[in-house]
Image (cartoon, rainbow, N blue to C red; front, side):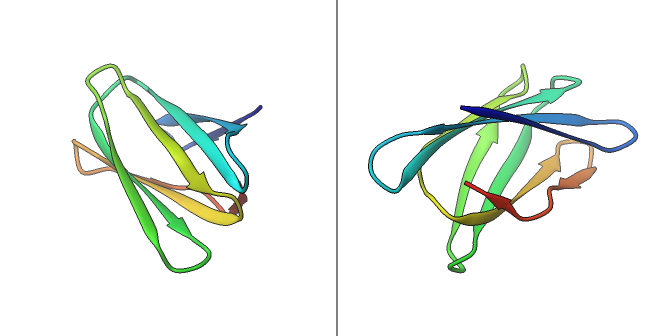
Amino acid sequence: SRVLRFATATTTVLLSITPAAADRVRLEGWLDPAQEAVVTVNHGSGATSTATADEVGRFAFDALPAGSARVLVALADGGRLATPVLLL
């Protein structure tokens, strides 16, 4: 698995990317400081997947398609964080 870190002046997101089934990956994440948020993965194909970070800032996607994607985090306080394009 790989762990990636992205940050703004006020928020950090850690992403763990682990191979799953054929052509699929598991993406787990943690927000610091811990907070609720809506997390969206925009796939290179144009499809999207959405999950909710819980009150301790954790979220997970179990079977995302492997390939290019971008992760967008919409924080409960109105803040936003976007990663560059990643290879899942």
